[in-house]
Image 1: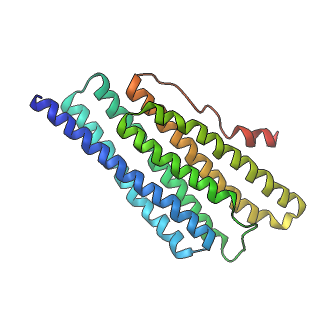
Image 2: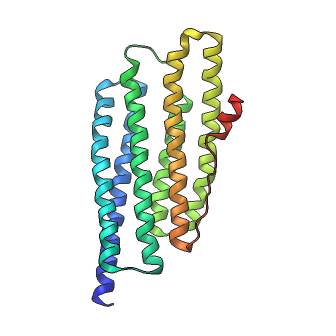
Image 3: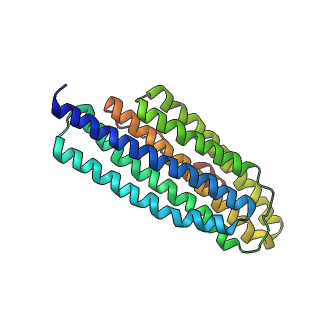
Length: 231
């Protein structure tokens, strides 16, 4: 192995480790934001919101590392795709952190209002999103296309739960308009989780690009099920 090749591999490994680090932070943010919602824990919600700055900073560090690698090493073929994929993936990870922080901020806005209904489907939705994220990170590091493709079906489950939650909360609001504000809080939380699922699917697209060179949109919807409901 040449010195140049060894340096390139080292820089790619460093980027991978940073990707795993930001992924871990985002996973924790999703978990803690849902805990804050379920327990109405304002202090934990504030922490999730404040910790998002660390996710943002790490995103910029990873982007700078990708750009530096491309400038210094001038990689070609699969190495270049790996650097470009990492640059794109970290953006989606940072946005997932924003969505988790959005759930936390919802807790802060709710004040003393009680939850409209017990949290049953929302925690399940969050857990699937976290499973998707962890699987996507594994597939990215291992360059495992088969593992990555499994995530697409999991996103369908997230979408189905989102539609179910939307219908249920909408029925509460129609039946008693006084529940509207409490219903909207839960809808907003569900929407953030649905967007996290879509962001993980974007990562799958980048894994496929990295391994095959093919750019293909796997998730061309924008909350289609909910849009159908509103027609």
